[in-house]
Length: 453
Ligand SMILES: Cc1ncc(COP(=O)(O)O)c(C=O)c1O
Image 1 (tube, rainbow, N blue to C red):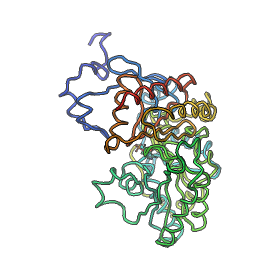
Image 2 (image 1 turned 120 degrees about the horizontal axis):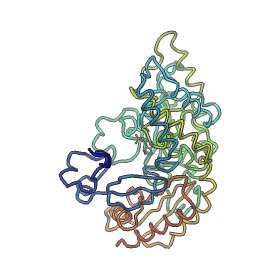
Image 3 (image 1 turned 180 degrees about the vertical axis):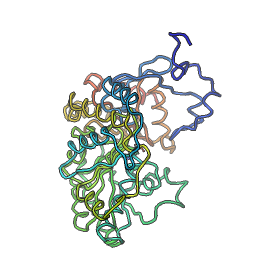
Image 4 (image 1 turned 180 degrees about the horizontal axis):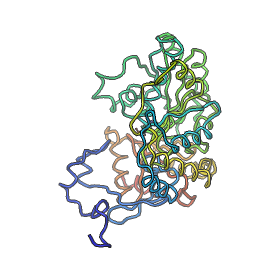
């Protein structure tokens, strides 16, 4: 290779022939459609990707809700490079390294009061499975061994582990696996109520009483059988469902009344998406555990985390006199590269005040996304912090076809990355987006959608 030759890993993506795409089974992707017309990203910086054919693509989704500080930020890149050359790996079982302890402390500093420990994993799915296991371990340690059931919510997304899809409520994600889901799981109703709440700005007014379904589930199963309730404070992957005013407070109160742990899955809402470090602070409803991933490292190195109240850690750890207290962990829990990326990311969030920037931008964001109300096909728009869901009418009874076509058109014609689920377009740009780029994003979405039949 000459000095000017491209690195093999980044070379010639545009020239990939169809058969060169064959070997990869792509996740959550229409593989055949993708391989017939690939959408390949080659590089990224700040608010933009560059496609393999050299086009600038405005990132309207922070990757997958995860690149909160924008792409390839220098301090994070440097921290990862330094870690890779200093301590490539350290076992996390019966051994430690300074980075994971330091990151845990930094995360605890921005968590709600009472949260004192963080258990690291590698993804949101693992953070959720860890939380479910911790809930069981906690009740066992307290001598309430009958508390083994979980309550999730319809349309909830908690990753793709068997635990996550069991408590989750997205039907296609479980359809092939229903024979082997966790036993002892029930679901609350979802909170989407377009008849009463369509085009709500911020939190919808109607639906707090939907939380009372938890009382009904407690009556059905018995409080003494229920370990935990898990919900996303704002449901993201299902297409942005904002909690109705008063709803989360009611869930918290019912959990408290029955000794049930409340888990907030903040894999998407964590790290500034709503204008506070975590949604728990935004809503001022404090759960017992918070699951995290994505923005913890600005997505530059995979990492998940399960944050717990000190009482939970103390209860589990003190229940064992000697030896390992909790038989759970991952080879890469607290990996040195992830820890370095996380520390640099949290520093950057602090330096640029990114954890509160969504609060500053929220009024402009709300105005911009609701300016699409007269757009062709639109049936609902909802927003909070720096998140929006734009729901389109379904075309000819084929759920998702219109939004998918808009997504492909947006990428190729408008040069913008959006995310769709069913016929809902979800927008969640990096928190560094400028006001001008907010309007640019919305204009691109409008043109892409209005081209659709
Ligand atoms: C709320 C929530 N929980 C869990 C997950 C799963 O995270 P991962 O894909 O990192 O496993 C996601 C992913 O989008 C999520 O939004």
